[in-house]
Image 1: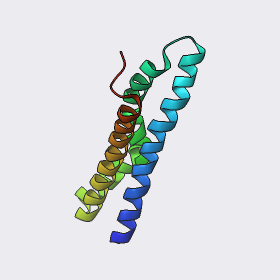
Image 2: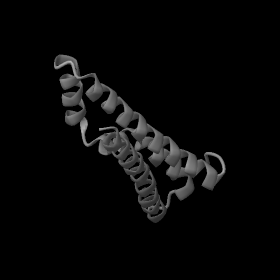
Image 3: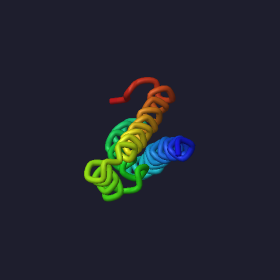
Image 4: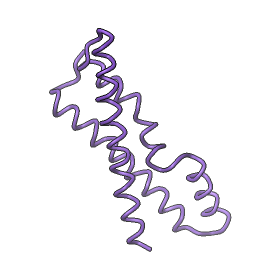
Length: 110
């Protein structure tokens, strides 16, 4: 059981990381084509994608709610723990992607 949890956490981390990196790069190309500053828009886009990256990584909000419900009403505390750890892993992926852009671009460009 723990092996599957670790696998799910690693997948959620990289899914959230990929949503932020991919969405930010493609979004900044769109900003460049419309005449806006691409580097400035990268931070704005990345910050706007944070919650969506977490939702995409955990597979949608309905699954998370049903897992919490199963944990609370059926007494399965491992399901609650598993869901919390998956959300934390997704948040870690988002933070790592934002940190990557800070490293690549220096500081937030305004």
